[in-house]
Image (cartoon, rainbow, N blue to C red; front, side, top):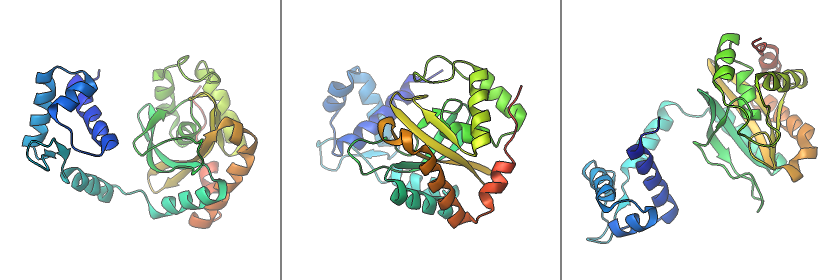
Length: 258
């Protein structure tokens, strides 16, 4: 169950990221419609902890550099491998679409690093974005590398019937899509999660970590390029990790739970 105070704090941080300038208590109350006392409590708590400060007296609050220090520490503790970053750059140049690296987190695939397409109409995404693991190409690529028991647990806990118009309606639908993906050697989504968006993904296993790399964009632009984008994925991975890396990963794909 979501905790309202935490949700409000995260919403406040996103507000500052979009606003990019200090905000007063009145600005926050007006933007969110929160009770003045609730907004004051959140702001004052963050100020006391050193996460907000007043650049000018009575000129409003703004996030301090402490957030950047935390972010840097997180990245240094569990960085996205350089090889994956290089793969993203190669794919971005080769396809012109939005590219990202995902990792599993429970019922979701979490975006760790993203390069957005320069096109005006594109798949818009940022690091930290979460998508359901069972109805996306990114997620199914991750599932393919998990033990059968873990797949079974996730598929039985997942929600069905609430995603995109082409999303599988039940566990059997996911199993069939993954069977097709395993046979192809890459996974595909076409309006499964978001209407009119599609993409292809492959798993990448480095040590004991499972990742997936995805190319995605508006369906009208990528639907007929799925095989080309899959080939670009293979080429980029082979260049950075060696020609045998992907073949070993695909060979080790786990069978779906039954």
